[in-house]
Structure formats: structure tokens, C-alpha cells
Length: 121
Image (cartoon, rainbow, N blue to C red; front, side):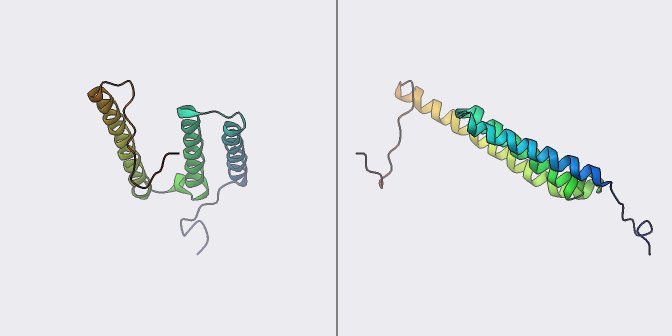
């Protein structure tokens, strides 16, 4: 059976080279976040955005998901997206709890809970 009869499809090499270059560019941006010493939410948001873009391109092109059926794509992409939604919801709940504690104690910031194993010097 030849490649066209078995459903195997050849993709131009240029696609892989362009994605490879794009991955290097995204990695460079990720390193620049550290180089310019960005801090706080901006730092972590940029790192996560670059990481997700790189992972998406790798899955889509190098793992050939772009050319797969929607059921296979759904089976692989839906669980991580569901986890991402749950992580976002937990983060929002944590922020709400933190602000509620601050309001309850009448402080601008919620008190820090000390753990039994920690020693403050």
C-alpha cells in the first residue's frame, strides 16, 4: 500500500522549520522576561503565555494534531483545559478568602499564618 492509500499525508518541511524558528523566538521572549527582571503578576503571566504558546505549537504541528480528527483533538486538549479552568477558579477563591480574612480582622492585609515548623529569627 502506498502512502496515499493508507491515509498518510506528507507535510512540507517548511512548516516544521517555521514552527521551529517561532519556538526559538518565543523562548527568547521568555528569557527576556528574566533578563529585564520583570516581577509580580506580569512576569508569571508572560511566562505562562509563552509556555502555553510553545506547547500549543508543539502539539499542533510536531505531534500532527492540526491534521487529526476533532474527537482525538478533544480527547487530548479538553482535560488540560478543564484543569486550567479549575486552577483559575481556585486562584480566584484563594484571593477572595485572603481579602475576606483581611476584612474580618480589620486590616489592610490579611495576617500571615505561621506554621509550626517555622522559626522567625
